[in-house]
Each structure stands twice: as structure tokens, then as C-alpha cells.
Image (cartoon, rainbow over all chains, first blue to last red; front, side, top):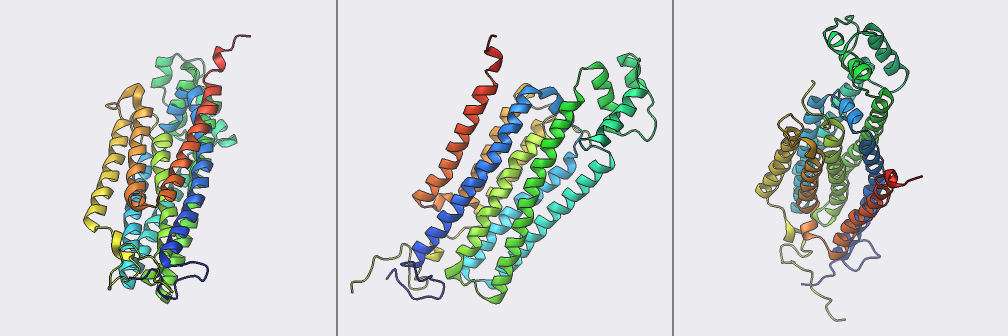
Length: 258
Length: 114
């Protein structure tokens, strides 16, 4: 069997499809290496501050919504499976199945972002955002228990408008020497890391829908399956990064709060 | 002109050898369940019944196991060319250097006596 077969999928500057696919894979892996280093820097900064302020990071993490994070983890892991099944369909030349799996993947990714939107909205509604809203909410709660002993502060009936996190944090700040500035530092990491990851998800959705469009147009025959594979490699990396974000951001403190 | 080298895995039905490394759906589902199961292990590890002060290394180890499964099976590193494997491992290696250098700085600052 000859390595050189004339096919429209073969670009003129490659010897054969095997060489072309190898180059495409290497190219996307070089890009993924830069992405790993990019996220590595952020994870590194997080690690340093978590090492310096472990207690504040645990306290701050325990007020995040782990239920939504767990559901989102299931969405992303499932989307990795469906994306891999899309490559299989592309290799087999099964156009209908390819488009179907790509749409399922895009739907799961969209569901992830919708849940993330709900989570951000909840955090914003609860004023669990670093800055003036956080400081005002915490100050109001701390003022209510000012001068009280720790036991009395824990039993104190806060005003109904006080947020749950502010009630608990006020007691910890007043009596456990928790630094609210470091709690906000954790929240900065939480918002920056999840937002950067979210941007990657949105880019991924765009790429997946573009591949689905190309597949529908019939420009992805089995010889061109690497188009799907290149996008899938990016998608799996986004999934893998979440597998580290989840424990570092949401599972730091012991016990569920939501 | 001599016939060039044969395409690995090529057959009459598949002259470009595209289907030679075709994934088995059953195997993909097993990997998916394993990654999902490890995610649940990680969540369990964050509860009061978890490994306590070893929670962080435990969770990072579980996360690494999940990422390895995703990389090896879903990202097809198991079928990857050596140069692809080298690229993937080099990114981990460079990230390791990154961590060693700045953690070596921050974790030893308290040892400096003015």
C-alpha cells in the first residue's frame, strides 16, 4: 500500500496524510504546552498564597457553591467522552453521528457556562465579591456582634438581611483572627481562575460549533478527521484544567456549606 | 519512481490507516466512569471523613490521576508520536521547574535571619 494517495484533504506541502496529521497534532500540542504553562503560573501564584494563608483560604472556599461545581464537573467530564466519540465518528466517516456528538459536547459546555452564570449571580447577590460589597456586608455583620464573647456571637440572631457567609465570617474575624483581606484574596483567585477557564470554554464552544458546521458542509471526510482531533485536544485540556480547579477552589475547606 | 514507504495500518478499505487506532466505545465509557469516580473521591476527600491535613496532596494526586487518564485515553497519548509525547511531558517538566523555583523562594524566606 502506498503512503502517497491523492486526496483533497492532503495539503500540497505534505508528503502524505500521515505526515500532515502528525504535524497538526504536534502543532496543537505545542499550543497546549503554552496553555499548561500559562495556567501553571496562575496555579503557582495560588499555591504560594495558599501556603501563606491556609486558614483564610479554607474559610473562603467553604462558602462557595460546591453543588454547582460538582454538577459542572460531571458536565465537563461527560463532554470529554462525547468529544472523543465525535473523533471516532469522524474516523468512521459517520457524518450524522459526528455532528450529533459535537452538538452534545457543545450543549454540555453551554450548560456548564449557564450553571457558572447562576453561580456568579448567586455570589453577586450574596455580596460574596471582593471589594466594597464584601467589606460593607462583613462590617455590618461584625458591628452587630461587636463587644460580644465568642459564645454569645455564635448564638446572636443576626438581622434577616445579613448573608450566611457574613454571619459566619464575622464571628471568625472577631474571635479566630481570620483576616478578611486574605479571604478577599482567595476570592480574587476564584474569580480570575474561573473566568479565564470560562473564556476557554466559550472559545471551545465556538470551535466545536465551527467543526460541526464544517462537518455539515461535508468538508470533514475521514481523511480530515484531524480537524476534529485538534479541537478535541484543546477541549480535553480545558476539562483537565477544571479537574484541578475544582479541588483547589471548591474543596479546600472540610464539609459542605450548601 | 519507486513506491514510497507503506502507510502504517493501511488496508485496502482504509488506504490512509485512519482507522488503525480506532477507540472502542466500551473502553471510553470505562475511562469516563473512572474519571467521574475519581471526581467523587475528591469530593469525599473534602468532607470531615477525608484525609484531614493531607487533603491538598490527596486531592492533587487524584486530580493528576484524572488528568493522566484524560491525557492517555481521550487525548490519545497512548497512540501519540514520540515527539508529541515529548511535547506533552516537556510542558509538565517546565511547569515543575516553575513550581520548584518560586516555591523554593517563598517556602524558605522565613529561614533568612536579618
